Image (tube, rainbow, N blue to C red):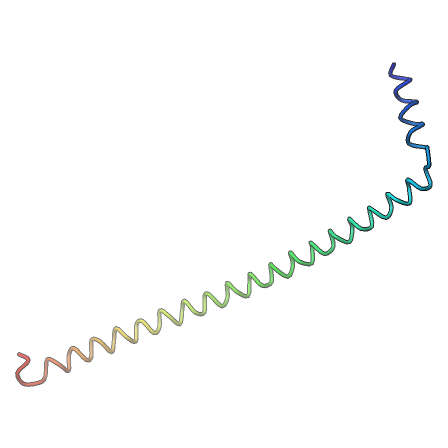
Length: 88
């Protein structure tokens, strides 16, 4: 049975081989193009992700700096308010 099965598969493969090969080649080229597009998209997404992480780090640093300035200004204002007469 194994030999018969092997021959049957072989015969099915060779039926219309030139057409089968052309169709398979077209499908493989289409698949290759889709894979190439996907790889390019991954590279773009990775670059954008790196850029966004850098922007986030900058914004976080700026936010921290501004919070420190606000806290310093608050402390100075509270100190000035204690110097007015009648606030003691």
